[in-house]
Image: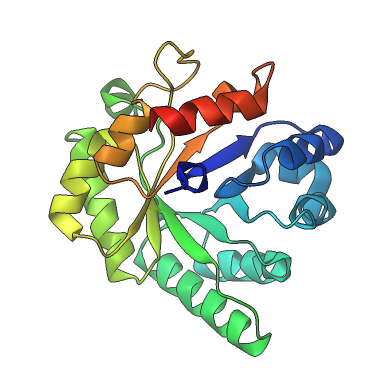
Length: 234
């Protein structure tokens, strides 16, 4: 098995030339993740620049607004044909249902492949202290389970969640949803702004389908070598 295909590399830069160069260095990964920072500076043309290399695009814009606004925003980016896209599960049932309906109808009408809609549960930068400051009662794990069930009930294709909750998510919702796991750090890697993290091998063993890895690969002196090292460690 090629474990590189289980790795989604997060591009955290506004420099499209740098992003393009990096993508060409690691073309055999599962996908390239382009988020808000990149999209806000480079727009749709910046996404096209990367997708034209043939790599799959994980467009991580985390849509979260009233249902009609999210629907309109989705219609504005679906022509980019991302492999994956994200919405915040905290947007609620109606927003999530309209998201699924909008994406399905648009792709059928335009004869393009439907992207995998991933629901974002609890950001990996948050912990129990953040929950207390936000007035959310209960454990982080309890909220993740509630949101995972909401993702399943609204027909989403997968879930973005910390590997710390992988086992309990699988216990609660089975294998119905694809699980994409950020907050991955190789042994000895920098933690940076992530609080709920695990190693690549642990995440795969616990049931993750894809691992999102950024700086341990993109900030290394040799991204290709770092990717190979992580893949072998898995």
